[in-house]
Structure formats: C-alpha cells, structure tokens
Figure: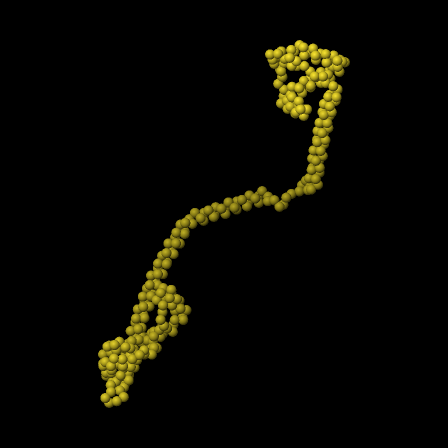
Amino acid sequence: MAGEENENGGVSFALPADVDDWIADAAERRDESRDEFCRRLLTAARAVAAAENGVLEADVEAESEDGDGEGGEGEYAFDPVVRDDLEALQGELEASREEFRELLEDVRSRVVQVKRETDAKAPADHGHPEYAEAETLERLQADLEALEETVDGGFDNFEEVLDYLLERTDRLEERSTVLATAVVDLRDRWDDLVERERQRAQVEDLKLAANRLGIRSAACEECDASVDLALLTAPECPHCASPFADVRERTSFFGSHTLETGNPPALEGRGSEVETTPEGVFEAVEADADGTGEDDRDDDRRGLGLGGGNQ
C-alpha cells in the first residue's frame, strides 16, 4: 500500500491484517511493545542486507547513531542487533515450518488411512437392503395419506352421528319407560281381577258349604253378629271385617250356626305376586317369554274360571 508522510517527515504504512497479527503475537512472546519489536525487526533486516553487501557492523551502528542525531528525538533509531537474534528468528521460522510439515503429513496419513478403511468395508457396488427404496417409500406415503383422509372423513360427521345416537337412545328410554308403566298398570289390573275372583270363589265356597248344611244365617265367631249368607258378597264379616274361613253347624238345639274366622286356605287359582317396578316387570316378561311363568298364568286362568278351572 502507498505510504503517507507524517508531520515529522516519516512515512507510515497500513499493514495487512495477517502481518499485523503476526507482529502483535511476536512482540507479546518477547514481552516487548510493537514499536520496539518493529525497530528490532528493521534493524535485523538492515543488518542482513549490510552483511550481504559487505558492510561492516560498525558502519551500520554508526549510521544508526547518525540517524538519531538527524531525527531530533531519536524516534526512528535502531538498536544494535547481534547475530544470535537473527539465528533465533531463523530457528523459530524453521521450527514453524517443520511443525507445519509434520501436521500436514499427519493429516495426509489420516486421510489415507480413513480412505483405505472405507474401501475395505464394503464393495463399490454394494447396496443397503435394510433401507426402504424410493418406490416403496412413496407407496407407504400414499397409503398413509389415504388413511388420514379416511380418518378425517369419518370424524367429519362424528358429532352429528353422536347426537343422533344420543337422541335415539333418549327416545328408546322414554318409550321403554312408557311401556313399563303400561305393563305395570296392566299387572295391577290383573292382580285386582284375580283378587276379586279369589274373594268371589271363597264366598261361593262358604255359600256352598252352608247350603249343604242347610244353613241360611250364622253368627260371626269374632263379634257374634248374625250374618245372612245369601247377602254375603265378600269372605269377611260385614260388621267387624274379620275374614271367614269356614262355616260350622251348631252343636246343640239352642245354639247357633257359626262362621269361623281366620285366613282361608290359598285357592288354586291364586298366582304368584309380581314386583310392580319396571325392572321387575321386565324380568317377569322375560320369564314369560322363556316359559317359566306359564304355570302361574295357567293358575290365574283357572282361578278366573278360564281354561278348565272351577266355575
């Protein structure tokens, strides 16, 4: 680069970055300032040039002293350099070159070694069957995309289907509740009908027994009230509501016929009790469908005078 003159008549140069870094590192290793190192470097260069031109070291030293007088403040004076410093610099340069050569050879040998090991592991035309081929990979990718489209399409109307199912479930539950209520009501009516038929049959049995004994009226065993058997509509005393079980003929001429009280024997036509809850009704319906409730229905029919029961 071109130099620029300063106020003292000297010339300054802008050094390249790598040269400036080298000067800074060398000055730091010698524990010197940059100016001192530059002066020593220039003195060494002049000494080498003077030695090549046959100039004595004394002449170089004299010229350096003259330079101090001309410069005023001795700003560009050079220190005397002995031959040992030059040899030291040359030795460091040779050592750096040798170290660089060794490092270069080491890197070259490592590259060659890696190349040989790589060539020895597999032939040049070898393949990798464990890796998927491009065609197989594309086919799998297409299948995956199709599956994603199917899943996304199936879930597009997921909420609509779920709402429909919930609504239908609610309707079925409501209908089943109505059906259970109707069945329970039908069971209750059936039980009432069976109970009335049971009472009618008991009254008929009492009247039949009294007719066989020639009895028209008898006294209640519980309250001694006289009861006209022809007007009796329920198997119980119309005065004290005690249930009648049988009629007994008087044992003496001055005695009276007696209607014995107590729980009458179960009639053949009385069916089994059924739980009136919806769950119990459904269980009874299932039992009827399986045939387990057929006997109870036959008993109820016979009790009502249907299907061959006692009239």
